[in-house]
Image (cartoon, rainbow, N blue to C red; front, side, top):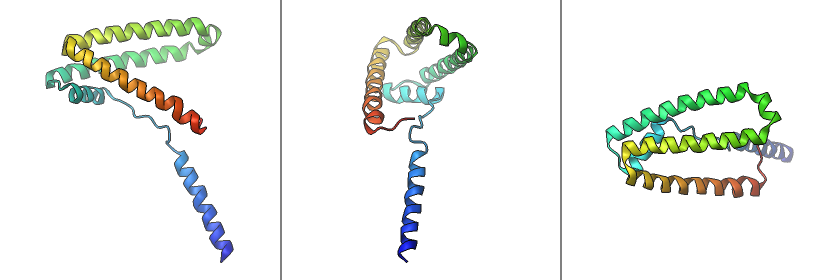
Length: 142
């Protein structure tokens, strides 16, 4: 009886560890629709503004997918000159954010864009804090 109980307990522990190890770091995939709905809810946007933002986000997602494919094709070059490529990517990202913000401003206006930037910064900071303290402090690595 004791052996059976011990064996069952070990089996349950093994099962619980394997279940908890799955999808711990699963990130939500934010679709264009999800992002537009979030902005609509937080900034109280009209349906027209929301639909324009959704179209903009879909276009940006397509461009980002093309860029990812190009980066995968150039993987060998990335390994040889990492720092220069990193700086180039940071510049491209800053330029893309500036262009995106300008397009969003044309849709929702300057005041709502500033409000959105503040909300976005707070959200990014909280995610960054969790990533810096959460995973590394507990020793969970991918």
